Image 1 (cartoon, rainbow, N blue to C red):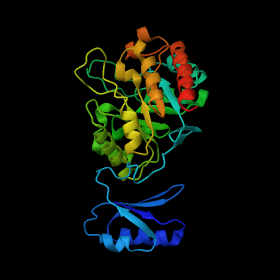
Image 2 (image 1 turned 60 degrees about the horizontal axis):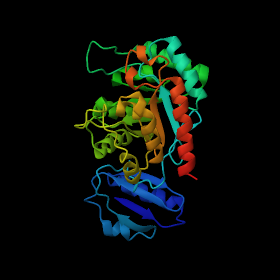
Image 3 (image 1 turned 180 degrees about the vertical axis):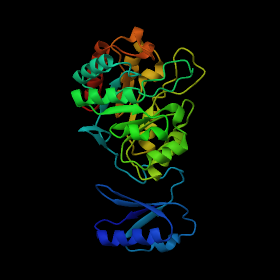
Amino acid sequence: MIAIIRPDVEQQKIDSLCDWLRSRGLGVHVAVGEFQTIVGLIGDTTALDIGLLEGLDIVERVQRISEPFKSANRKFHPDDTVIEVGGVKLGGGNFAMIAGPCSVENRNQILQVARSVKESGAGFLRGGAFKPRTSPYDFQGLAAEGIDLLLEAKRETGMPIVTEIMSAHHLPLFEHVDVIQVGARNIQNFELLKELGHIDKPILLKRGIAGTLKELLMSAEYVMAGGNEKIILCERGIRSYETATRNTLDLSAVPVLHELSHLPVVVDPSHATGVARLVRPMALAAAAAGADGLMIEVHNDPRNALCDGAQSLTPEEFADVARRVREIRSIIHD
């Protein structure tokens, strides 16, 4: 439920209303937009006298929200959320590219890739330190050493870093990580999501392998319910009956999520297709669909990569994609 406040109401009266609602056992979320202020009510509102609330002189109208996700809902927060890290912004018209290898393998690899993707215009450096793999015999990542190498690359290039967390027990290792990624396999690890709700750090949530958009938004809600509202949603393809690509990239998710939620949406064409030559056309399509960013795997030697080399671009290929994406965005925003 939301209460839309009349224009030019004194802040003291809004604060008094919020205090009264909290005294009724409700959570309160206040969104101050350019043209209106919305007070969102979170919790069981069945015992609340709607007529009394609507009768207050500061309330313009009251509207029930049927969707189970509240904090992530655009009705609660009409203006786009903008995530800013190290001067790089995502959302609200701001676009950024997140690029780097699937796995951090060694110092030379991550530094070489970091330098190249920054030169090509990437805003964030990605790299896996902990790697969830289908087979227990595959490369699982360098763990703490991988994070140290990412931080070294950050110190050299100035790029904020994005890396995936596997367990809440690893949180101390992520103290200096700029954006924590929750992968498709962990998107419904609710205990992990609850823990991430208690930290002041952006969280990038990847859609589940067979997850619906509602389930993705409910995972965001888990984090936001804990107090952390710095969420980035990521469409990375879903499992379907098609075998020509690794997954099926659902580009319709971009406008649908923008319609349902105020959170920024990025697209990962690398995991979606699993084929390097398909990354460029899907990246361009995602930019045309209105994505707030792209997450692309880049490796300095894809043929010898320890993880997902088949879907990784070379630095030269990434530079070409980044240039073409800028051209597409200049056209659609002209």
